[in-house]
Length: 531
Ligand code: NOJ
Image (cartoon, rainbow, N blue to C red; front, side, top):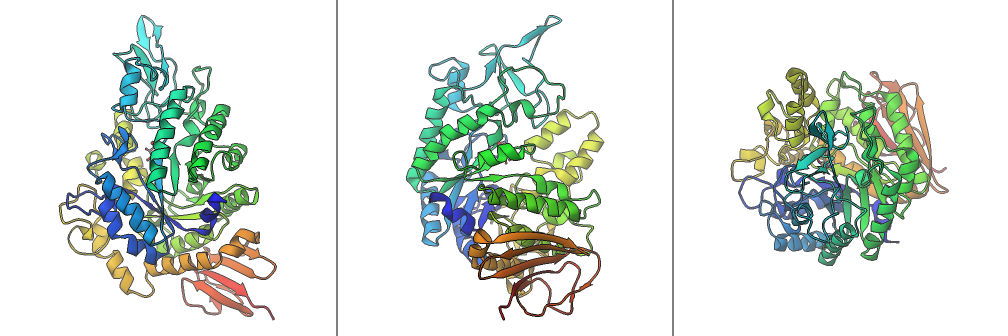
């Protein structure tokens, strides 16, 4: 079965521009990734998902693709990509690329032809006439962009509005047009030929729009262009092309996606695995964990696999602030992150670590609006009535928080580049970096390595076993039972040490040394001995 490798593999997401600069221009690139493949192998990684590196005007750091067939010069060349695929495969690391299916850049030649009504591109994007209200030309309806502001942009050339669910430089593709499928198929075939192993599919909930194109009551809701019935039909059609090329697909679904839609997406006739975001809701406002909510989320993610689907098991990505910062008011944020990592990554599904997570990297110390680089932050400021409140919100939630330079060492530019970085560098690199952590036996990085190694060792029981969750007197976690083995994952996220009997079991992992108690923020993985 082509996707059988997904649930026995640990993935690693690379935000290319901030990972490693290999050519000394201050921006991360493909060469830089090649340099760090041995680091990833040592960490226990089986596949990398690399964020977009295609030719782009970089309105949204590459999620606005101008030419799908060309590596942007900022990130290297097509030859570098071929080399990366070869070098990764030599180390038995699979390569998953990011495919942006919902939109392109407005500088993409498909869009330019569509704007000029050159066939067969005329209907390749979502074009609608405006409405005249009180003598003024207005957008076709009140739909709002996920990035804020109207979801429509007027084209003077075509005298029509185009839909843009994200920024105005990112027009939405129209999957009612066969041309869209034909062109996307060419992209998929091209990368399959280069030998990649799969795609992370960007924003796949939004391919279809509500066909009535009516205004909605709740303007802020993304519902009219999320998880529409036709979305499934489009994905089924696209699935054939991925399947023919033996490529796995990991699709990013919307935050509000219902369980029914989610199971449909991951039914293997649409996507192999899904990214869902319910885990973002387990944090209290005061930067601690809500244990009840955490339990609910873990069960729910596991349940997707039990029901025949698969979830990507992750805490972080390039769109969310750092986990450690979300946990900063726990008495031991590092301990809390390790508890969360173990609880998530030993569920059924496909674990994925985000670059820098394994070092316990933190949010960036933003002070003022000009500090932010992200188009989403810029648009929020533009559309905000209360700049002060927006600043406060972005300091906590900005996507730039997770896009800072990977902290390789305490040397100049954190060992990221020989040139002055064009990406934000967090001042914590001097005390928190990979070089230092590699040397310390009990460092965060080494804890992650031990966890990920154990995840591999337990693959079989995780995939075959039955799960039972518990949350009892401050101790939470789950038992995994198969005919021959009995594993317990148990964490103490209460604020006190709790007596615990370790007898008749072997400790496979613990973040803190074992005693008569389960100490606060301790997470332990045990195997019950057979007598
Ligand atoms: C989801 C990506 O993860 C995000 O970074 C991007 O801005 C949007 N999709 C639009 O492509």
